[in-house]
Image (spheres, rainbow, N blue to C red):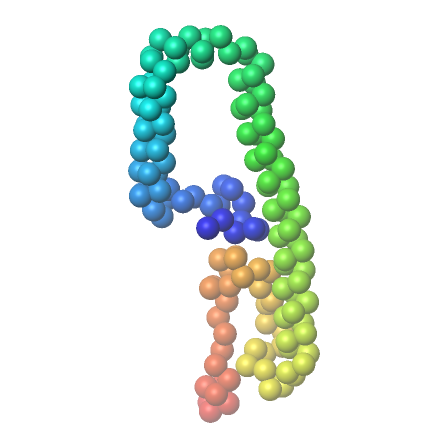
Length: 131
């Protein structure tokens, strides 16, 4: 699952799941074997050699362009996501006031996807009042 705000460099499925990589390699190998078996190795090599250079450039250039557009869209979406999170946190602390378990003045997390959320320590109010 790729998050809508998570950049492509942060999303590495092969690190968490080796089966993903194994399945991808197996599917690519089976596709190559099927194509060579159906058409013959001479036909496949001949077709690849007849492909003009600009077709290869267009194919790989479109992959790079799609990745660039995807990262720009995710960056824009992340800014809006963080803005909505800050607004929701402000509404939460304003509406609950002193009944909130979160003390005013604590750092507001920018995003739930950040690692900083887990490093923010929240004091327990009942322990602070008994000391």
